[in-house]
Length: 178
Image (cartoon, rainbow, N blue to C red):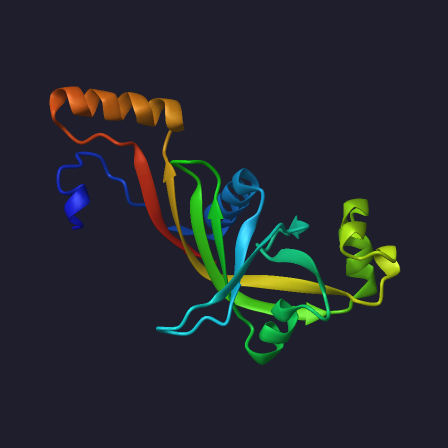
């Protein structure tokens, strides 16, 4: 047991699978609004990262992004599709990391489905811009850190714990298995 949890009287670990995992992915991704999209993941090497917002998260947990074909991200994914997404929804809650593979396509139907007029900032010719590609991120595994009952209850529990000299933090964490 981790040293920080030695005095924790509550169960604060819960691995998620299936529908429960997909619901948590959607919940935490929505709370964050965007993520750090990381490529070139290698042991003992810095990875490349950039902020991105998914245009859609489908019912299988796939994240869908629009990207320019001449971006560093696209060339990095062509060399190695391994990808990690990092999320933080609040200052003290809604944390998640997902690892998986990303696939690039030029699926015009998907571009039409995902298109948002605000994307014209990056694709000046609109949804018919020849540089637009679709990135599908397929998560394989992940980990989350959250509160069980929200920040108000978590703060109350921490306060009571501090007064009593006991550990009550209302945290919950665990593996996300897709």
